[in-house]
Image: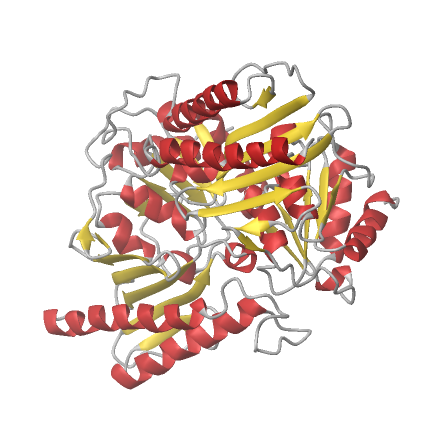
Length: 273
Length: 273
């Protein structure tokens, strides 16, 4: 993608984040009884916020870049006419959103469909006003400042000194997945569940007192596409459980603060029993 | 407890929250490499923040109310000389703290040991600057404003329209606990894991688009003592899984937005298979 074409889309990604954030904010911490929106029996606050935010983003993309495709969580996908597609998840972390906890995020990715490479990724948290932006080949940004991942070049950490995170133990469904998660949990210093997209941005920021590994499965493309450029733009590694690049069919994700830790984790994943 | 004796302790609870919050803030989102504190191999950021915050609270209680006892998470308990004891958990939600997610809380309770009744409870979140205060017999406060639980008198909700929350499915340890959790998960509208103390304050605030039930087990006294006056002061109900008042030996907690929902949940818990 040419520089000016990408720049236009980086600008668009920021506007998509603003737009969706303004919608989502109206539905956060609103009980049914206080809300002006009538919540029907089959619907819920999170579903409404999800759909309205996604539809607004889709409309803006159609207007600004009508040839771009859209891969989305809620509605039907839109085919690309130019080889590029947006990958949208309006509310990643619905359990947190539902309970009024501000650790959900809007995930906005852009992918080159010819080679499956993500071109840019944005995570937006409208309540805490936290925004991460990754552009392939460039340093990632947190609220417009370059992120310094403190563990990027620090290869002294064994897995026994690492924090392992997964959103929930229930995401490990098959006996193989459960066995792998269990093996990694045993060797890592501590396992912290919960988090959704916040696990990945925490890894990117180096917020933890030790480097981090995220092990997840049962994911969809829109759950991780936007995270790839952010993690890679801080010197972190994000692949599938075999160490291969992620694509639209991947469901298992492994992310690490640096290359060395990623290799150590892969070794545990690929070992037998 | 006399009014002026309680007033003094309400004031003290607020100062304990300020004090612990100032300490905890210094350790939040600080990587090992950036911190001035040397983290040893056997220790970690959360442990240091936990201990320093707890010790500071203990010192202030000893100074202001030297006859009060202290039941605490980290250090040794201190016997009460007057029948009252503070129940402290400096960081409830360590998994969130470790990852830099601001949904942990400092729990500060005061209990009358003669009858096991909590007199006051405070939940403090120093990063988001959110504070809840419950005083037995009075309406609970959020940042000094009376909380309006929108579901307090709304008895139209069946369990099928309710949000069930538990911090993690791993807290249900025995086959009986797992069977009960599974039965309740099946009848409720949705189950949202994660949250720690934020599940209870979310219930108190009515942040959800539907009323809430919290079902937890494997808890210690300091995990829930401070929450009791807060939940009761918004018209919510919090008991053990048999519907009895909680005390220092309880480990299983059931909280609900109102009496009707609490009874419906109890019926599911006490039913067979």
